Length: 104
Image 1 (tube, rainbow, N blue to C red):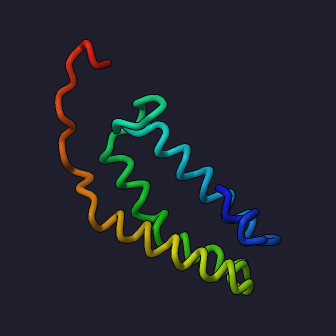
Image 2: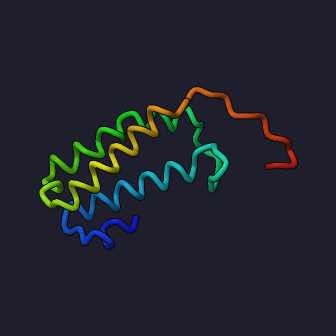
Image 3: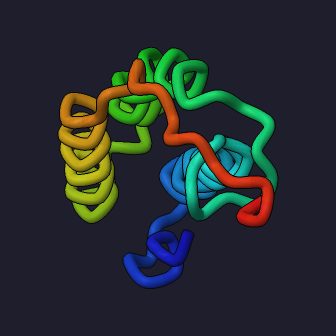
């Protein structure tokens, strides 16, 4: 979420950066995982949402011209590679460990 300010991104690159950051924060904040705000989304559904999200990290900035800025190109390429690596290494079909009632 700090990338637009730190990198000095402008226009559509700045908007896409904030948009992707907000979408990721929303999804992660509501997914059933240890560091969440509220457990509303299953881990499997989170994976299903990530399936189109990962390629969009490059496609939408490219389609809107946001990648014309050199710093934006580096940022979105890095973000895409990190998200793709995370997606490929995550087992979204795993069953969550049973939680005790006291841990809730």
